[in-house]
Amino acid sequence: MPPLVMKFGGTSVADLDRIRNVARHVKREVDAGYDVAVVVSAMAGVTNQLVAWCRDAAGLHDAREYDAVVATGEQVTAGLLAIVLEGMGVDARSWQGWQLPILTDNAHASARILDVNGGELTRRFQERKQVAVIAGFQGLHKETGRITTLGRGGSDTSAVAIAAAIGAERCDIYTDVDGVYTTDPRVVPKAHRMDKIAFEEMLELASLGAKVMQVRSVELGMVHNVRIFVRSSFVKPEDIDPRQTPPGTLICDESEIMEQQVVTGIAFSKDEAQISVRRVQDKPGVAAAIFGPLADGNINVDMIVQNVSADGATTDLTFTVPAADYDRARVTIEKAKNTIGYERLDGATDVAKVSVIGIGMRSHAGVAARAFKALSERNINIRAITTSEIKFSVLIDAAYTELAVRTLHTLYGLDKA
Ligand code: ADP
Ligand code: ASP
Ligand code: MG
Image 1 (cartoon, helix red, strand yellow):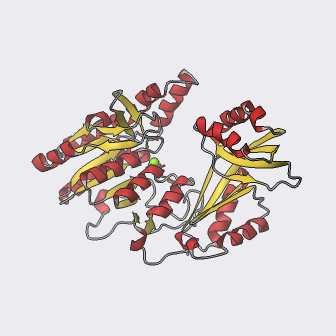
Image 2 (cartoon, rainbow, N blue to C red):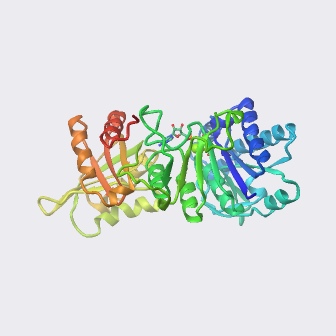
Image 3 (spheres, rainbow, N blue to C red):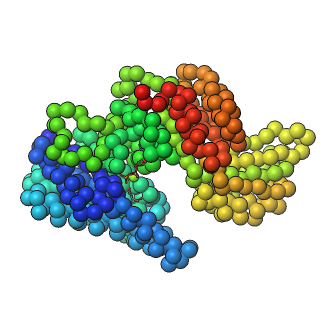
């Protein structure tokens, strides 16, 4: 049988009882004949605590040391799961990122995987059917020999990369929900689970705020054609009928999905900040003068709106950045004030971005227009809009996020019957 990758997130390994539950899921697949590589996250809350300690130790700290600290959470769960599996009579050993190794670039705290060596795992599958328990989220920068981490939520990416490296039949992502929903089921109880979602749509959902999968993991899955199945770890292993497909969502190629909806899902993010540069010179080179320094500072600019100037001399330019970069972005623009030439800087952090996603938008007109009307009927003001082939986003006051998401969810017929 081909190998199988099983990934368990923080809530699924939150304590020893849950780790025992995970071990029983692993044993179920081993008994079914699979060679299993398990990828684990840190126990729920642990990474947040580690991050907070780094911040408290020094507001501005060396990202290499941050990685040395935050990578430890996964080491604990990998070891514990291996111990529990051994106790159940399943041959298992833990692996840290540097031991395989999982090689990454040196963008500490948000490193990208360059290569995964799955050779030793495969050898041990063949020789003794040993289960590999791999610490997610971490890797190694070969040239410096230092530990790296892949950004928050990065264990998803570890799992998909390992699945690609060992040619796994599937990469099962076990989490605290039983699949990918039309929107966050914790916010909209009427959201419904999708049986399948195309890579491209999942990529948009994830990058626009749905935290169920890390963006990079979906990218890797798409490039290497890894079948990713999102499912619940809270189902008791004994209750699973091996002859039936369990509840969950398959992330797969668009061509595998027969019935395509115009709108498949809605994502939102409150992690946004808006900056408006007022009465900026309306002349060539100004956009470069603003966005050049932001790019140099590694600040991701998202929505950009520029008005056509009325007087031909000055105009307003509005854009969004991640909330965490708001202060830095303001300082950057203020420093460049003389080169840019503007009157005033306005900003807001109490904003949210709500996005509507669907491959069907490629061939249907007027999808966004319906949203604008529905939002206006709810008195929700739109500050900025962006559109692309398979999605559009609106920036609104954060206080209206839930209302906007629910309104659009109903509007596009996504509420469960
Ligand atoms: P894990 O710790 O297992 O990696 P995460 O907390 O990272 O789990 O991701 C799962 C969470 O993602 C769910 O609890 C859910 O609240 C949230 N989520 C956001 N959008 C969606 C969506 N469209 N479908 C399912 N879950 C979503
Ligand atoms: N433990 C890491 C985090 O909390 C990685 C992960 O859970 O995927 O971000
Ligand atoms: Mg996660």
